[in-house]
Image (cartoon, rainbow, N blue to C red; front, side, top):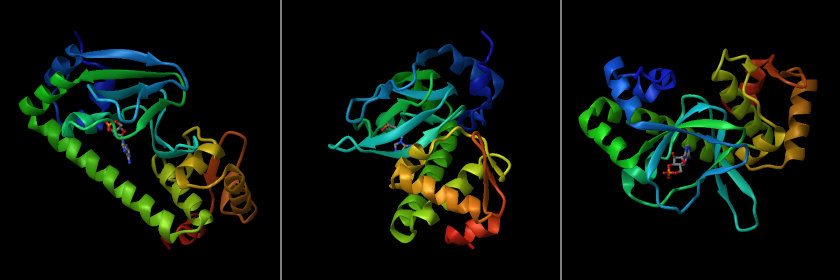
Length: 223
Ligand code: CMP
């Protein structure tokens, strides 16, 4: 069996040799989830780790009134579901497919065996968890310290930095942005319009381009 090409390119497994990825490929399964289906339910017991092979998923908390807070949006090469496996606690959040998504599934015992046999995976995971904690720290800081334009500016800069630092290539709606920064769709749309007329952004029906990075950084409290 050849090594799975997604696993070869996942940062989490970047320290592994191709032979080790072949061994990992042997113990994984693939599953397809249609758009809007729930992959992981908050509070359920967890028995597997997932790697996104294609598509996009969101990690969300859902309040009793049905409002959603998006903690993270993940795409190809990202992983989730590790927390319940590591600390033996129930799932910390829901994970929902935002589009038809294909996932690689690694079951608990195989994941734990991999960690024991290949400590470099543990190092990759610690790095990824540190990155997530930094991003959660930024989010908490933004919620407390920034107004909505500041939060929108910071998120757009982060999304642009996933690529060339200029264009946001990820498909993301104003509604999703609102759920990521704790605001309403209307306010986010107005804010993006203001950034566009102010010359900081160029917005088309399919893309958002950053024109004045310094201006956005200043709005985001980073200048
Ligand atoms: P687990 O708790 O098993 O199931 C839900 C998953 O969502 C969790 O593991 C993490 O993989 C992921 N997750 C939870 N909180 C965050 C966050 N703040 N940022 C990114 N991913 C998260």
